[in-house]
Length: 213
Image (tube, rainbow, N blue to C red; front, top):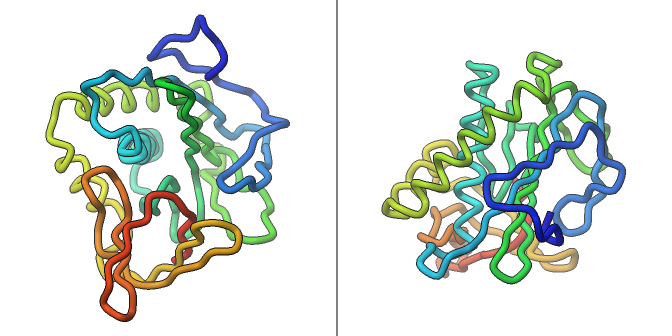
């Protein structure tokens, strides 16, 4: 969507299947029939909050839409962009930026989880179809983008923390394929950066990486 000059903020692209999807840090994306694959555009404005804080918006919008679609699930946000169901990955988000435009891509295991070698995944067993889920996510995302632009960013941080792994949770953060730091979750900065309290008491701010709980 980033290269589509006709695309506007609020437009969504919903795919029935993906054969060239990718995850964070270049991981292979596995497409399962009946799962949700959707992307939308955010056009950044000069007065907008820090762009990296859009990860808060995306995560909250996604967990809210799943709550509405299939109530009563044991969901949790995992920094920066995953939704877990009973500790297993149910959904993920990938944000990509080109100039003043960000594409937010969402993948949700509505039908069933893919088979992954490096982690366990969860699914919703087809309780809602992609076509029915799409408008729920679009509405949640639009509402939260409006809040992101008009409200105190600290409110979104607090809302995200309320659905996430608790303060003090032991974390390992892979900043890259060959970089690993460990410590305890110490909350978020206003821009969405993870606060990692190292074992020596020092505080490290992580703005990109993959978390292992």
